[in-house]
Amino acid sequence: MQVSATAKYIRISPRKVRLVVDAIRGKTISEAMALLQFMPQEAAREVLKVVKSAVANAENNYNLSPEDLYIDSVITNEGPTIKRFRPRAHGRTSPILKRSSHITVVVGEKEE
Image (cartoon, rainbow, N blue to C red; front, side, top):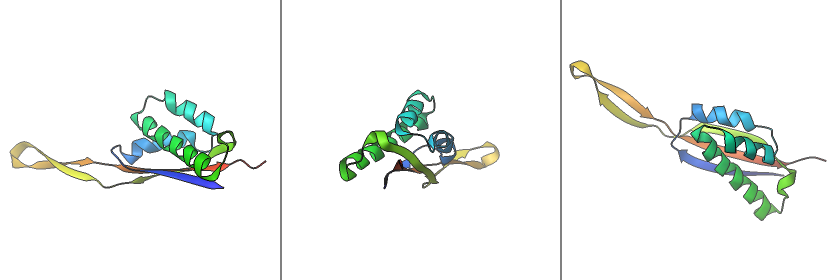
């Protein structure tokens, strides 16, 4: 049984989120939460929220035990980019791209 949770339009670049996400892929829920709590990256807090949400979905909607769950897959996709411009020398401009990301966490039950 697989259960998922998604956070959309998170205002952190997907490239930065993927660094955090790669560290928890395949781990048990307790290991993943411990890692995320002590990571210095801002993206770790957002990923932790999504992991907690996926565990709550599994527990409340499908009556699965949180001790038997592990991180099956974590996907970070690019969300919409907000485009702004900064004035530069000689009347020119340069773009500022404010990127966002969508985070999806899928938890699965361990096979015994």
